[in-house]
Image 1 (cartoon, rainbow, N blue to C red):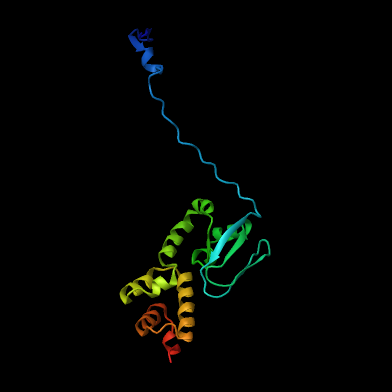
Image 2 (image 1 turned 60 degrees about the vertical axis):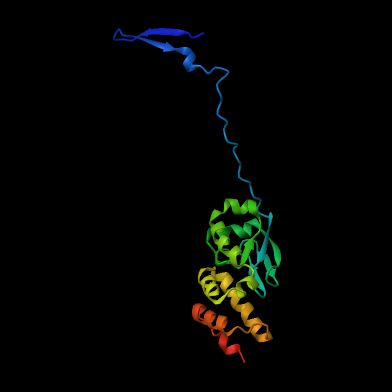
Amino acid sequence: MAINNTKTSKRGTKSTVDIASIVESPAQEKAVAAPVVEKKKWESEELISCHSIVHGELVYQSKKSGILYDWQDYGDENEVEYQDLLPLYITKSPLLFKPYFVIDNPELLNEWTKLKDVYAKIYQYEDIDYVLDLDPESFRAALLTMPDGLKDSLKTAVATRIDSGEFDSLQKIKIMDQVLGTDLLCLVS
C-alpha cells in the first residue's frame, strides 16, 4: 500500500512524495559490502622467510638489530626479522630491489607492492639452468631484461662453470661479455 504525503512549500505549491518509494521494501535486494581486510600488524621481531638468489655466500648485517644474516649459497633460506627488512624496503636497498635475496612471505609481499613488480621479472629467470639453456637470441633478451642481482648471480655461476669445465658455449660467453661488460672469455682455456 503506497502512502502519499502532500506538502505545501513556502511558495504555496503542492508536491506529492511517495513514501513507499523512499522506504526500502523487504523484497528489495540490499547491496553486500565487500569485506574489509585489515592489514596485519607486524611485530618487530617477527621472522620472515627469505631465500638467496646469489651464487656463493651472501652476508647482511642489520643496522637496526645488529643481527648478522648469512646465506651460504643460491637458494638458501634464512629468517630475517621484520624490523630489519622494513628499512631495506623504505630505502629501496639493492639487497631487496636488485635483488640479492627474495622475501618468501606472500602476505608481506601483498603489502609491499613495489617488490611484486621486481619479483615478477625474477621468477621468469630465477632458474639459472633454464636461462643457460635458452637459444642465443633469447639468452641475449633475458640478459637485457633481468634484474641486476640476478645478472650478478648469473656471472658468478657461469664463471664457476667455465672454471670447472661445465660450461663451454663460446657464443653465450661472448654475449655475456658484450651485454654485461664482463670478460669471461679470458677464463676459457
